[in-house]
Image (cartoon, rainbow, N blue to C red; front, side):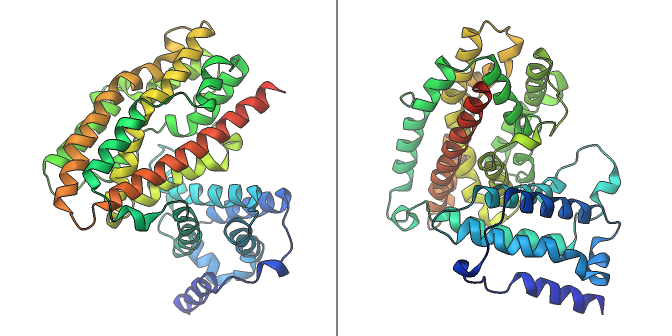
Length: 370
């Protein structure tokens, strides 16, 4: 009986979406209440058993989830509240893939069939929507190596953007603190997704990815781990260095960036896309972080207060070259018919990162304006 009920429940999530025009528009309060309902569901000792025995307890969440998917991905004017709700739900499920050294009971439902169905429903609709931002068909006709070299050369030393100039020249102490607060969600668990893809058969590509991971993790020395540098920046300003301390203010665009990494690294079929995504990160970070470092210097901050930016500017110049020469290019020759997927991963990550930067800048400006 239990398996039958679960199958029926999963089938609910696979039903076609309803007509958008006939649905009510939900408010931020509706989404917040549904997220609270989901949080309570996560706390059940056996979530799948609860789903089987008390399906009525899911009604509020299921109703809002269905409408959120429509409002986020099926309308001409997507709801930012729907986007935030969906990305927060995805993040809450994805974070179970990492260990936080907290109460072990928090992981009781990490393999829940119910959570899997919710995750699959959101992720499939969201990833299809994001993919529309990339002209995938045109990528298949390119000389992949030439296209990748052109992209990396451009992104390694780009002209300053309007957003970059704002961070570098205009951001105040208040804005700098907001920047740190938002970035801490990822900065304090940095490179964790990379750790999810390096297992398997040993070869030169795997060895290079492992080498990069080891440098990100400080060669096994906690004080040199990159996340430790981020914690030091927070402590310099008297801010909370506890992971997820500022989760409530993180824009959905930043959450989407984090969730996208999980989407790629958790599926080996997406390996080439992950490599393209990670390559963009390593190539683009030095230029982006230089703005943050310059802002800190302009504001008279100590070396510790800008240490995280500084170490990435130095190390990621090297990491980006390694990723291009020792990982991406060999994979192009190994997977000739599918190598275009590296460009897909690269281009989509550029889009997602640019969108996230814009959202951070907007939040920083809001903080500065009171």
